[in-house]
Length: 53
Image 1 (spheres, rainbow, N blue to C red):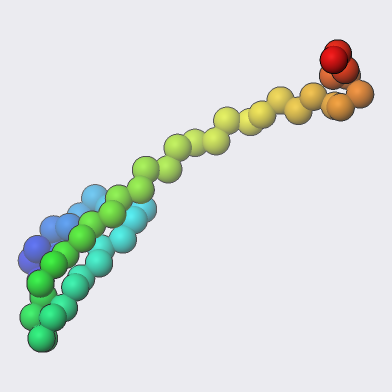
Image 2 (image 1 turned 45 degrees about the horizontal axis):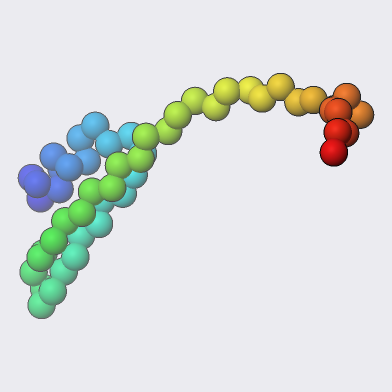
C-alpha cells in the first residue's frame, strides 16, 4: 500500500494500474500525462486565402 501511495503522490493527470495474479500484486504501472496549455489559433476566413494553382 505504501508503494501505491507513493506512486499517486504528485500525479496530476494519469493512471496507476495494479496487476494481480493468484491474489498477489505482481506489477504496478504508472502512466503520467502532461497537459500543455492550448494556444488560441488565429482563424483566417476562406474568402481571404489566395487560390493560386
